[in-house]
Length: 452
Image 1 (cartoon, rainbow, N blue to C red):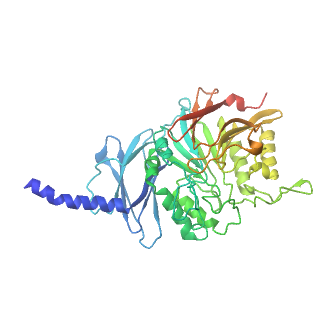
Image 2 (image 1 turned 135 degrees about the vertical axis):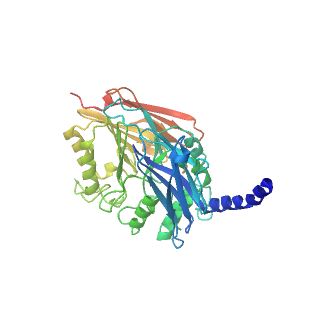
């Protein structure tokens, strides 16, 4: 009788499983994991009921639950779950259920995460690593431009999913809007949902925490800035498909900050306040004060944040390059008033430990710019993840400011922080599609200090 009963229930369980899978669009994705909180993201079909069960590893019977119901009339249904009141330095497991009417208890883990350790005032800062990259183009032949597909080998995300790191920082062009996307609100939402849902990305989404900045292609049309008429929609889409701690201030921009271990990362918004790239950077031989990339509000926030930070490494991450005097393309250097304001601020206040990170360029390089009476500044560009590559050419073929470079290869970067207090070191490793090592570059905290 028991065998017959089980066989009778089997179609029911199969139906529930197939139905749940059909209602899942993408995810789960892990967001920031702090000392006592964590964020999880998932996208389901509109009109779905979602239950999240989570528990401390080894104690599945003491699970807790969170439940959300989505509106069937919405275009898309990305969801965020806030897990609070967690224990320090503890591993938790979780499981999602979609549209299942009866749930007795969790049966297996969909994923897991570990809360941070409270090391401050107790022990040295932990060694840790994070991944980064930019320019992730997912092919969609029906709406892509004719000819050779622009998107490359997406299996790079499978390689990245195997890395044991604290988080991933997406540095812009995290999806690419096309003509079918950026003229209307639905198109912007649809591009994010479509590209997030590709199967090759799913393991990576749950493997580590994710943070993101944007650049032009996941903001709107190529090279656009403050004049984009749908930028508020872009901000809504971005904040619904990522799990950053914050998104700008006063309802403007998406700039934010990551503090992990003894490293502070300032994630800049290079689009919301940006002037047109072809606006003249000087008028009558004087810098044009209207040529902006960051805007007054954001630049003031950055300066105050740098003054507040005590981190030995203060990384300013930006979609476009910041330094690179040889680049013919957009960079903060092309906005001379903001550039000089930042450089003067660093010099006057003798801010140690400043580095820049950037994406956008479809090649990887480390740019070094020397300063009189101060430590040199570096801009570490990592690109592309899957978008088209190119060969260093023209004035950049033998760029005298480049101390490391990779062209014609998809790649991602791994930032490793290690060493004793006062002797911390950053080592950046660069890897190809199959996690083949392409090179590395390093700098110590003592190389980023003002001379006494």
